[in-house]
Each structure stands twice: as C-alpha cells, then as structure tokens.
Length: 276
Length: 194
Image (cartoon, rainbow over all chains, first blue to last red; front, side, top):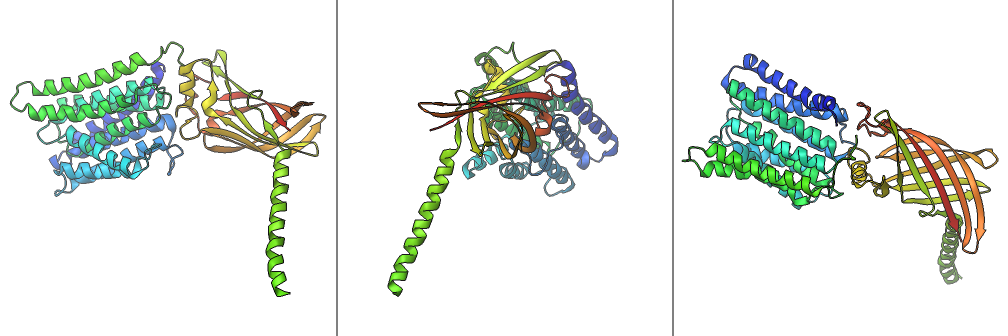
C-alpha cells in the first residue's frame, strides 16, 4: 500500500461522490428529491471504489465477495426510488426491511448460505439501518457513525490481510466523511440513505468475517463495529433530554470501534514484512 | 431352459461388471501416485521491480499415468499449503487479494496430450485451473529419472513455465508494480507405485 494507491482507490470515489452531491444542489432543489443526490453519490462511489480494484463484476460474480458491491448497487437503485414515492419515503422500518431482504438474498459470502444465517443477515441490516437514521437522529450523525464504523472495518480488514476490502471500506468511510462535511455546508434531506450505509456496514463486516480464515482478526471483533452503529443510536434516543447526547452517542460508537481495531492490531503479528 | 437363461443372464452381467471394475482398478493401480513429500511447486515473482520473491506450495498431489512411455499428468496443489516463510505473507496470499483459498482451495493441471520431443523431454498440453479460471497451458516436461527400490517403482519429472496472474483474475499489486504480473513456476514431481 502506497500513497498513490490510497489516493487512487480512496480519492477518486470521494471526489466522484462529492461532485455528484454538489451538482445535485442545483439539479435537484426540490426537498423531496434532495436525497437522490446523496444516494446516487454513495451508490456511484461504491461502484467506482470496487471497479478501480477488481474491474466490472460479472453476474454471477467470479468471487463471492463481489456480491457485496452488487448488493449495495441494487439497494442504491431502490433507495433512489423511495424519495420519488410519497407513500414510502418516510417509512424507515419498511425501507430497512427491504434492504435487509435484498442483503439476505444477494450477499452470498462463503459459509453464509443457510437459511438461518440469511435471517440473521436480514436482522443485522434491519437493526443497523434503523439505528443509523430515525427521524429523530440527524443526518450528520448517521454520516459520522458510518464514517467511524467503516474506518474501523477497513483497519480490521487490513489486519486480516484482505487489502481490497480494506480499500473498499476505507473509500466508503471517506465518502461518508465527505457527505458529513457537505451536509454541514448545505444541509439537505437524507431519507433512504441509511439503507445503503446499513448494507455497507453489515456487508463489509460479514465479508471480513467470512474470509478471515487465517485468524488475522479475532472472529467476534467483526461484529463490534456493526453493534456500534445500533448502540450509538440507542444511546442517542435514550439520552433525549441530555444536552450533549450527540457527542455521547458518537463517543460510544468511537469507543466500540477503538476497542475492536486496537484489539485486532495488538493480536495480529507485526506487519513489518508485509508486502506489497 | 428359460429358467436356466434367466439365471445365467444376471450371472453373466455381474461377472462382466466385476471384470470391468477389476480392469479399471488395475489401470488405476498402474498410475504413479505423486509423493507430496518429495514433490515441490516453487514460484517466484518480481517484488516492487527490485528483488525476486520466492515461495512454495508444500502439498502437491495427483497421479502420473504412464502409457507406453508417454506420461499423462493430473496434478493438484493445495493453496492452503503456501509457504513463504512468513505467516503474514502466507495469509495475504490465501486472502481474496490473491488465491482466495476459501473459495478456490486447489489449483490443478490436467494434461490432455503429451508429445515426446526428445529423449526424456515431453511437450505437455493441458489445462491449468487457478483461482477458478481455467486456461490452456503448454509446458516442456523433463523426465528427471526412474528407479526401482524395495518399496516400488519411482518416477520423476520437472517443468518450468511462466503464468500471467492477471489472466487468472489475480490483479492485486499489478498496476502499482508492487508484485510482478509474470510468475515463474517450477514444479518437480516424484511419484511412485508398488
């Protein structure tokens, strides 16, 4: 891993996402259509982050982990449709259920094909998506949690010697960070985006878990970042009368991520000889 | 008479099947079994455009069927046995960045035709499967020797060939020049039969 690769694999998706969002400020001014800009941005960035490393995936894909980006793409396309339908655009739980259903069907990582595991995947996406964004949770909070969680998964993927997943999760983490900054500059409606980040977080975690065969990362640690997103939102909702509830809930998420990443770094072997 | 035919027919069919099974078994027995202890698959790649990086696979299995002096190869290599003398590197090679051992645990070569080109030298045409991708491959195989000892008959072959790993969907580090696309492979086989 060198700075040029980091700029290429992380920088290009971030620039693409930011450009799409900035364009949408003028092209999609209507409040109901505002989320479409960010949805397109995250969906396109996900595709670019993947294609830069692996090329265009075939259908069915050559490797099972490619289902991750195909699922994110499918959920992004669906998420674009929700803001256009007045009946569905505010139904967070229904959207999360649909995202969970798609993830349970399409994310076919190794040793995760039986019905029970698929039901668990459905529940994970459901909880993480709902946890990221209820209408009481502000959009910037969702972006910061997604930024932290995906950054944590990226570090863990690197510790488990899965550099492509590390770059992908790292790129999507940077995209979430750029969305957060753009949201601060120009606050926009963000309905349905939680579906994509929910699938991204669960997908990256399960992908890392299923390919972690050499025990680079303690298996249970892969579930901590996923839990961080939900715990953070629960804390946010429980502390509704607290002045600093946003910071406390983010601190909880950050602590979970810190524990999992530091643990994964400490237990793995020294990386001095790692190549490339 | 009819009763006799009814009894004789199943007996005849049963006997024919038994004979065919015995023949198949004897053909299988005549195949040399690759000795994974004394067989080696070594690879080398250019690292960052500087040094040559070597690794090996410790588990090479399969059969060599020798028919009228012409060998036929069916070789499998267990990806999990990759050994670079560094646990982290082994882990990285097994990850989806390279071989993806979880989904593609074995790479294999099966010859389809073998031509003797010189004394103890053969042109072997076959198909190699790596990372779930099958490609035709032509290699020059040298017979390194044949011996008989109290435990049976031994035979040895060796080949060197190059593969382009991006042809097999292993793109990691190719573009940035971190690890060369061309991989030199040396496979030395020792096989035995009783």
